[in-house]
Length: 462
Ligand SMILES: *Cc1c(COP(=O)(O)O)cnc(C)c1O
Image 1 (cartoon, helix red, strand yellow):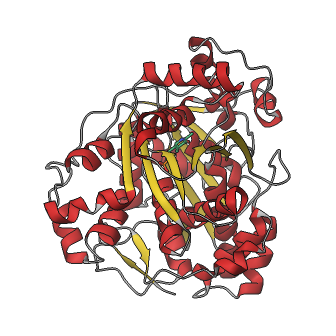
Image 2 (cartoon, helix red, strand yellow):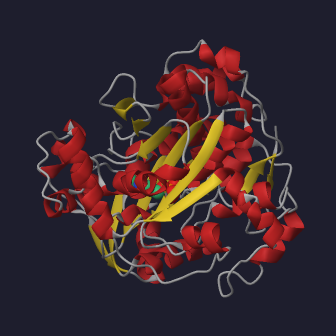
């Protein structure tokens, strides 16, 4: 199985190349050349998340690694989870289940994708006898999950830019209390967009890299993150009804990575009814699914900060595969003037949406109300991101048949202010989070300028 870009020019890439490169050279996103197909009867007989990962992941890694080596990597990949099964489910009622993806070390679902990425980064670096720098900006959970996933690998140094802004104190502390010689959390005096720009320039210039050193991207466009996420959709289907009937999945979405993993699982043969694309006030995706209007708007800060985005990078993969039937020319044409001009696709093609997708944009007041509703009526406390997905299910309930799974992407304890505003008392906190609260913060304060940040990395990279 090889990979190619959604824009067609960068192709015949191995798994390892796609992993280490991140974004395709033509500006597109990597896709597998075909969708590997699962045997549902085989999956029905598996039981753990790891069993499923050992079945799914090798379908994508064959161009670079032997299956037995991949299995060895996977046995060590997901670590420091607070639940033995990694994922738990909570049944709200007969037709509604919450899939808790937040039992990992950073208490958000991003541990699934980033621990897999880190494991394969490390494996590749060992084989090639090289080192790497991870460079990224974070508005919330990506940075902590990336730092945590890479911190035990000496071949990798992580530099994460933390902007001024809407991040919760716990989210920041998860990055600043790690205190390892290969981890550099940088408090950059600027906005998230300033930080993103610096990261983008860093990937162009590479001035701080040593010879033979990789610069690794950990943002959600990396295909390996999607693979890790595909696995838990199969796990959910196994747990909820052993694949006996197609499920609906309601997914709180920002960059569309998690939704795309659901779509990918269905292309691989997982029974699927509807995908609910649940967003906060940053509603570019909802505008597309409702009105065929995919145009960039300014970011508004919400109580679900990990979904505060102006464009959804992984959406390009859906345009390419689902709407354009893998026509890369069409895909690159549509992105020529984006984001200065919005994307609107052929009306006939766009109508295809309704086969599979529903969407809803939920504002902060409705999010609070939903948190309160589930707490009062079901004694279940959810974080604001999860509540966006839960509220979308309530709004769309009339149009849904089949059972629905809500993806719970973060532990509520990560968002104490939102809990307080919703008048919810949470009395248990994951040990991984409790730990960071009282630890000393070590961070580097720099201005959000290329020079100061690139110089800093160069110095620490000696
Ligand atoms: C990153 C994140 C999301 C959004 O995920 P995407 O894959 O970008 O759509 C949702 N919830 C939480 C808690 C997150 O950290």
